Length: 320
Image (tube, rainbow, N blue to C red):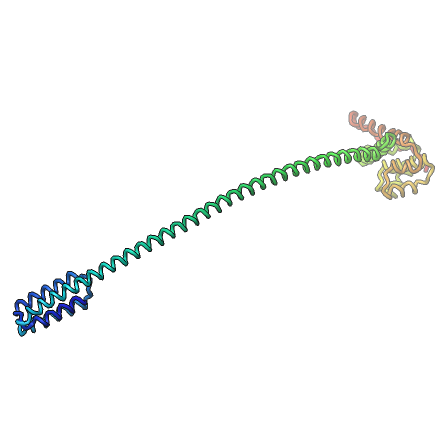
């Protein structure tokens, strides 16, 4: 912009001596020089240059004589300004080189500082790796100790469990010995069970009409208990059945106790073997006497099953 102003001044001085074509050429040259030297001027400067050119062209017709003087003065002034601009450009170049050196130095310092930080980071990383290895080693040692301790505790627990099992086995053996039923007691229990089985068997056979009277006759023959008397007892205590009443009569006879007392004991939930022992009745004898009636009934049943029907026999007349 400063160069354009100088050119304008030179043109103004040369207006009286320059002819119109010369002025136009000079203006065009000045405009071209201005355009070459300052290619980065703004749009506004270009617009102003065009307007100035137009005015120059209009005024150039009146100032052709003064153009030559103005041209020389302008050339002299332009040379002076060119020197001044070259000097300023040189100084600007020096300043730029100085700033570039400062920037390079700053970059170098920054790189050196970054290198120092990288070394610090490397050192920190190595320290962290060292600490991680130490921690892993310590953890491995802890795990190994824990495993040994667990194994030790497991062995101790197994030993304790073995001891407890041994003690439990000993206690079980002692309990078994304490609860072991003596041989004689087992024999008594078996005898009591046999009596109960005989009662059930006699009751079942007496339920059969074809055997009922035969069983009552056998009771009369073997134990002298009349059929009439036995019928009365059955009517009074039907829940006992023929087998239960027979055993009750035998216990009453062998134990020398009243029949009602024996029957009451049976109704209280005691089995016939327990009642017999209560009244000091020999169980073997009781089993044998009951068995005699049972075997007679079974024999008669077998005979009837293999023989044709016979005429009914009269029941013996017996007293109460």
